[in-house]
Image 1 (cartoon, one colour):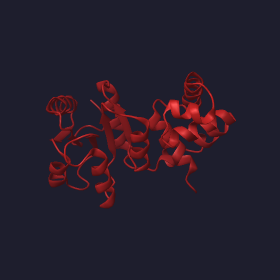
Image 2 (spheres, helix red, strand yellow; image 1 turned 90 degrees about the vertical axis):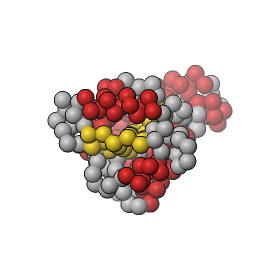
Image 3 (cartoon, helix red, strand yellow; image 1 turned 60 degrees about the vertical axis):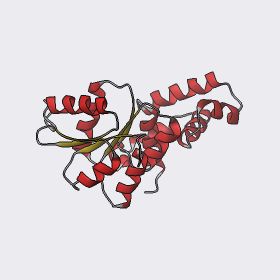
Image 4 (cartoon, one colour; image 1 turned 30 degrees about the horizontal axis):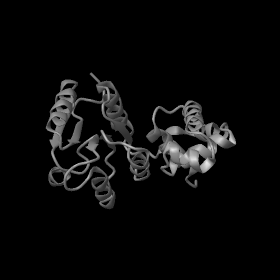
Length: 206
């Protein structure tokens, strides 16, 4: 059982009942308290500020979408860490979520261990600014990129897909994929969302 799990509350908002039940059982089995909601509107009615470790949130739902719920929480000044889950994820969506402060962005299907690890990180770190979590090594990693790799990462952060990046830079899609793979390795990140997050953090004025 995780050291952070006992007495920690996790909100789960997803319109898929099977997902809600599955995540509810998973998290309860390792000691978390779980509150599940079918819609963003129901969540807002039941939400208590400061009561939870994090929010596991589906992106696409009837009524308010996950991204719209994120914006509403931001408008209210809430600092609840959000882990987005979706079966329809794409780079622009990840960029928008991360720019708006998402803790992480996880695409379905995902492994239970992946989600549990992210929830534990969220419980420990909360909404500590990304630049503080990553430290000065991010700037050094960015400095290690070649000019072409930096061009690719800048376009990824803008939300462009591989084909769009290839067209803009006049290179093949395979070359873009190769550059992206090297960038991910050099930046020591495991997902596009994490790449976007650390890159944006490093670019913020100090």
